[in-house]
Every structure is written in structure tokens, then in C-alpha cells.
Length: 322
Ligand SMILES: *Cc1c(COP(=O)(O)O)cnc(C)c1O
Image 1: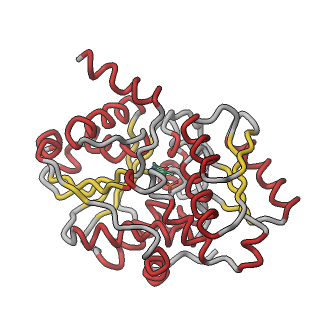
Image 2 (image 1 turned 180 degrees about the vertical axis):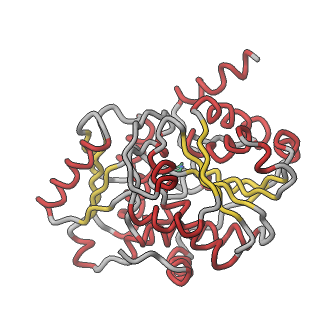
């Protein structure tokens, strides 16, 4: 599988113009004080689907031949990938089927249905949902869209990093949360081409460390997958994204779910921003490893804001008590 290049990202930007507005990159004095760094938050939580993935979905659908589009697309996802595909399919007039493990986040399931996709709840785990999606795709001849081994998704997602480096050409480091790795891979492709001074640091939950361990060991490994942060809940490394990360990534850190919840609160308090767990993982890296970031200009990717009500109540409870 061919890795996307910076030209593919520029091409994706042309495709996305007219679909999506650039998202803000904002600083907050309170956040700088909390972190002892100069922090710039990239607000992908304000995308129409509440997460950055919509960039990839729109780019992928735009690149499909019309006869393929007519057979529809199918994806398996805990939520944001699903919303991205459903949103993009509706824009392109294509049918979309999403397989989720049973008992999904109710707000994400409702959002997928509201976007007109067919939602199939199947299996206890992502792996079972994936297998079922493969079977349905084979039966219907529809295009199965992987969460990460997709050059067009990575190229689409890369457009957020073009925006970041236009908005702040002088970043020292950018912190990117990793599930399947499309976001971090895209950050690597774009930073290497237009901001080579900027280090890309990836972060994952220590409760779902497969991407981190794959990068450290240089092999695609499977690991326990127990994080409550849905966008990060992936149990194995992906070939394409790991290949890109091995070339360009400066560092890869792990944070625990408790620190992610703390970071959600910090983003609410200091940046008036609602982030879901995965969307706060970059912020959590700054809380957990302050020495890596002190005094630097740091881009923090707030990748998504689709937190359920239960999740937000949990995040606020200890903060309110403290
Ligand atoms: C999917 C997702 C991630 C992880 O992105 P990958 O490209 O799968 O590594 C991070 N944050 C949010 C909000 C997500 O939906």
C-alpha cells in the first residue's frame, strides 16, 4: 500500500474546500499557566461531526469511482470514524452501513442514524464487529473502509496539519493522539514536508497500548484494549500508519485513563472546551510529562468533542469535589 505524500494532502485540501471551514488554533493564558508551556489548541472538536475524521471520510468518498460509490461503503467503528463515513456518504449520495459492537455510546449511535446510515450492532468487541463488516461487504460488494490502512483517509486528515502549520509555522512540537494512527501518520507526512523543525509526539492510553508497543518494537503487535477513551480503543497496530510513524515520529508516550479525564477537565476549565477522552489525550501528555514540553511552543490536537453525558459527569465529579 502506497503511503500518502504531501501532494496527496494538498490534493485533499482542494477536495475539502467548500465542504469544511478551517478550524481554530487558539491559545489560552490559563492553559499556559497550567502547563508552563506555550500551548496552541487545534479545535477539531468543532467539526460538523465533532471530530477530525470527517476530513478523511470526505476525501475518500470524493476519490471513489461513481459505480463504486453506488455499491456503498461499510465501516466498523466505535463512533467517530462511523460519523465521518456516514456524513461523507450522505454528501456524496452513497449508501453507508456501520457495524458497531453492541451497546455503543448512545450519542454516537444516534448521530450515525441521524446522518442516514444503517447501523448494525454486532459482537462484544471491535474484532467481532470488524469480522461481521467484512462479511457484509463481501455479500453486498460494498467498499469496506478500514480505520487506518487507508491512504485517502490519511491524506484527508493531513489537511488539519496544513492548517496548523499555516496558523503557527513556528511550533516546536505537536502532540497527536493515536488509535489506528491515521492522525499521527498524517501529522508526520505534513510536518516532514512543511515544518521539519516541529517534532511530532504521539500519545496513547496505557490501557490500549498496541500502537505504542508496535512502534517501540518495530512489529505489528496486539495488546489488551481496555481504555474508556473510544477513539483510542484499538487492540493492534496497523501496517500503513506504523510504517509512516517509524520514519518520522519523534516520540510516543503513554498516559493512563485517569490523566485523560483530568485533561478533559483542564480543557473545560482553562480553554472552555468540551473534549471527549481521545480528544484530551494530547493535553494529558502535557500533564503527565511536563519536562518534555516546558517552555516550548506546543500544538495540542483536540481531535474530538463527542463525549457522552455519562462521560462528562464522571469527568466533572472529582473536579467539583476538589
Ligand atoms: C479516531 C480518533 C482518534 C485517533 O485517531 P487515529 O487516526 O485512529 O489514530 C483520536 N481522537 C478522536 C476524537 C478520534 O475519534
